[in-house]
Length: 381
Image (tube, rainbow, N blue to C red):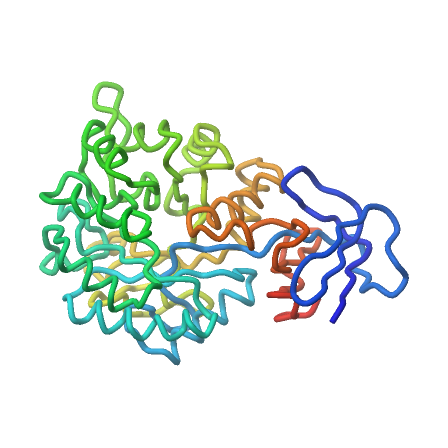
């Protein structure tokens, strides 16, 4: 099957080009410039970007990945796909070992069906002082044997583990994760600058939602943020929803790490695509008010931030409109850089001849008009 998309603004890693694309058998076979063949689908000058790759997502459409329910997890994946996330990793939260193992096994089925790209354990090896929306009584010291059991439960689909490097045995688990092909992500941590460097030296390659759930930058005690931004071995996640991080700090991180080391993520939870209300996040209860998710609390303003209701199309648009980055940079941060974290950048993440035709069509306001996965329309423009 051959498809040609004509009269498009095509965003590739080397620029934005007026032209056209040809797709055959689910892959991009030609990227042309200028006038396209007459039989192509005319996109009317709309912008085509690579499908978004979200490596940190807890759910959506009312479903929560930590529940491990295949039906609601599939609904969450479908919601994010409709917003342009053609590759999605399911993130779990701190829970008892058997609960995590059951959820990982259930989500592995969806990975094998192609609905999910992997499983991310956010916890349980995180700092109590920075646990955020994680149940503190379920936190525990890193344990290599337990970690290996969780990886086994995921049947080869565990792709990332968030861990605090200052905890006892954390460096051993980070080394084991690297050996297992699982990206160790530093986060929910009270680590010093030096402890963070030790974690990176042990094999950590990702910063879980930079700035959030970690000590702030200090000019005498730089903490983990400085270490993570400066080290070329680390990809930093950023939640660009206008709530988690001030725009000035987003711009600072994007400038310091560059588009090649910055991965936009949603940290989305069950309320994404839904209305305000009360939703689960693992064993925790979250109240969503005006689209902002916080742990249920009687305190004024609610409890700590508990994920987001963000989708990647909004993160992309905000990165161009509010952060002032080019569509090329935004595409790198929303697609190619996170694809590298997953080791999938040879197949997805950019509009490149030979890669899968995972594409998003955006209108002049950078809103989603069409979504294609593996050459088939999920949402027709």
